[in-house]
Image (cartoon, rainbow, N blue to C red):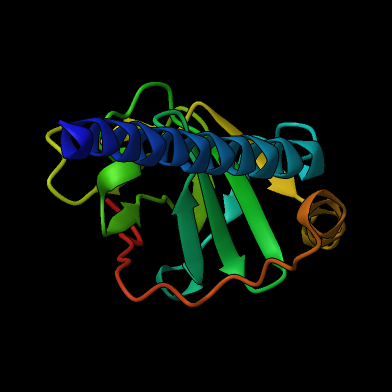
Length: 155
């Protein structure tokens, strides 16, 4: 019976530790999202885009996607509801005549049944974002070149 009590206490301790780690990770993700949103500017109608311009990307949730077209140029895209966005390993962007435009273009997710219409585009001040990230957690944020991205130059 002593072992049974020990196992129960050990399992409870592991569950609490797991919950604490999950809560810390969730808080870090919320802080990161807040930093990105704070660095995002006023909405624009479009941004210049050619197929080779998709440098890096990061899904933030089902509604938002951070896209780097260059290491120091980023855009926060709001896509309405796109349930597969947080889980995809590859994306694409549609564009027309060298621009990605609000309500005209979409984010294409690997395995997604429907494209995710871009509802809002905000330029991200990458220098401000780096400062926000340093202030919030003492680290830097350097985008890595996307290995799994594709883009449609025209439709």
